[in-house]
Length: 404
Image (cartoon, rainbow, N blue to C red; front, side, top):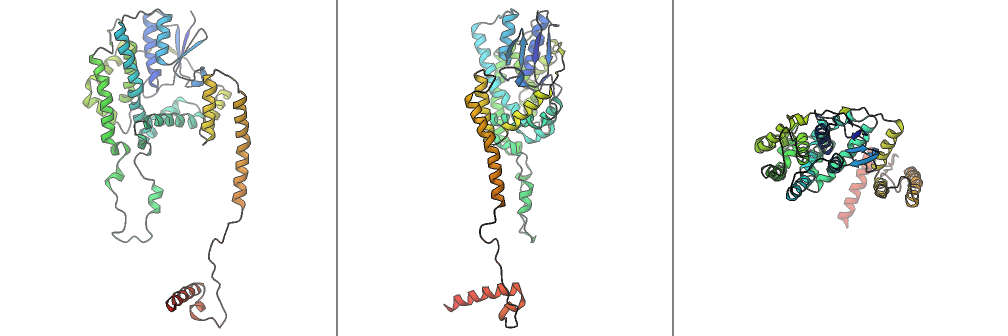
């Protein structure tokens, strides 16, 4: 039998993968191959490269030259290929599908809020973790692109202000300081200025998390999550729940509000997670193979993210890239070639125009010039130099106004 290759994002925080679906796929595949007697017929490749498969999505399973991407599709492929029996009723399968959809659409949002949208946790934990997973120079582009995607996902729920971490720009504060520090005139520092972003939106954030975790915890009591026993193993839905809870409980982050909330108000979820984590099925038995990166593939990924980050041009590029990806085209068509040519010629043209504009002389007089009559016949304040000439003109204008 041909060997199964599971391509995933690399490990972090003591977990087998930093990505939720990749972690779920590793655990489910490990259990499935173990109980099928094929523990030596698969391996894990922490490539961290979504472009390795046609759908540009990790996790991705390669078997017999066929790529299967996404956790749920991988689970279906293994169940069909390995003839894994499904003893659930149609009603239970429908409930499990609805529960998994809720986990991927709502519970993963809490992971985005904790590890990606929070600037404090991102700088202290998540960004360094990606620096260990990726090779240079992808550490400059890939993590920022992943964080931008996570911020766009949480913006739908009104939590984009977590990106700023709730603090004003220090440079702007320095510009507002007056030249003369008169007592009582300085801006007093408020309590809200010392608060982090999570503290500023704490009430709304905790309410949002409680609503999601309440639904997830209810799924445990209604047997939506079939936990099974040590002999039968855990279900596909259970491993997805484990993979969603692990990034909330395991990482050591400065703003651990999510872990605190889980342990204080949702002990059943914590107990279910710890039971799954400490089970025999949670042990990964596959061989972890090293992924060999070529300089060409690394340069291609780096250039891809650089172009994506360019304003306007990056938006057009991503739209064309996704269109070619959905149409399964491996080369540029006439439309993409025309847009690429226009972008190539537009960039140097705009650059040249900007440099020409910067080289033009300023329009109008940039300053007022006061001519001083340095002769002995100078009258009034003009005889005291430039400052006197300016004051003399001003006083003269005021006197003329009163005279009228």
